[in-house]
Image (cartoon, rainbow, N blue to C red; front, side):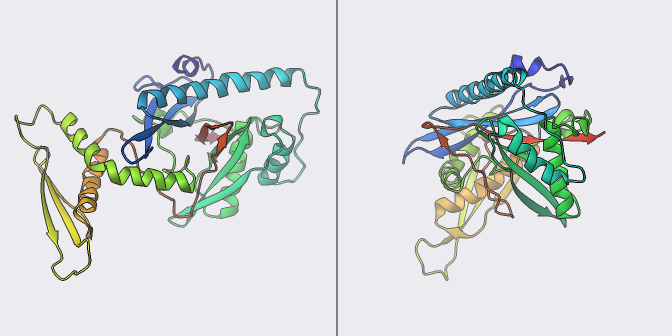
Amino acid sequence: LQEFVQCTRHFILPQHRPILQWAYDQRMANATSLEFRGIVAFLLDGVPHHVAGGWHPSKKMAQRDAAERSLHFFVGKWGEQLLLAEGSKAKPFEPVAGASPVQDLRDFCRAHGPCGGSRPSWSHTVSEGEFTATITLSLLGVSHKFAGVAKARREDAYADAARRVLWYLQCPGYQHAFAPNPRSLAVTAKDIPSPPADWACDSAELEDLRKAERKTVLMRVQNRLQQEFAKQLKPGQSVWEWTYETDDADTAWPPLCRARVHVPTIGRTFVGDWVRGQRDAQAEASQLVAEHLDAAGGRDTRLPSRSASGLESEWSSEDGGERIGKWADVDVEAC
């Protein structure tokens, strides 16, 4: 996969970071064991892509699966499609004069072979009074999500996202609407910006991932502290020190509890919220430690969470195995 991405000739890849960037989701396979899903991010012709694989009992297997699925899609399926297109006598799509980009996208998807006649679906989020549109579209049997940029009006956000997808698919009339932006964060930052946390989850998977997060956060954060500060710890020293408060006025069981954890190696104390039970109180405080470590640098498995708009992915099973899911931030400049 890395060799394939490096072979791109239309955009010079940044030299200051890995070609492939990996992250992992995890969920409980049963009461005692975890499953992992690999998510790989890379630039393809200047456009950042994120590809999610299927669930596996180890991170190594999940990583390999995501890489193989990416190659099968980009090299295998798109290669076959290009060969079919060369021998096709179908009339090229022509946008209707005066039609909006949203209508052009609907019409193009009905005529474009890789879409299989499927229609795009739309959703949006609102942040600080601006709208960002997301388009979900099936290409060669694989669900894709494409995001536009924030706009003051919802109609403008939808039109912007539609134009970007039409450019990405090289629809006639839109081939030169944009160009990859060499100054975007996807190119200049240490890490390719992450897509929305729940982009590759349906509602059932989202709850599974939250359960796994709650059950394993304490262990994962402790292991992370041990790895990052191994040279600063003295023999036998614990990576953190715990104290707890309970609400004496609370008569329910388990009682309300708040955890306080001190991490000597960074000289910080973190206080979680009031929750029921000491275990959940530890999880709350541990999550604060993880967020602090994330802000200080480094990537870790992130907890998916539903966005404010209720945006959900539509990945599903196909022939007994998960489809790969793709997210493309079409971070390009208008021409």
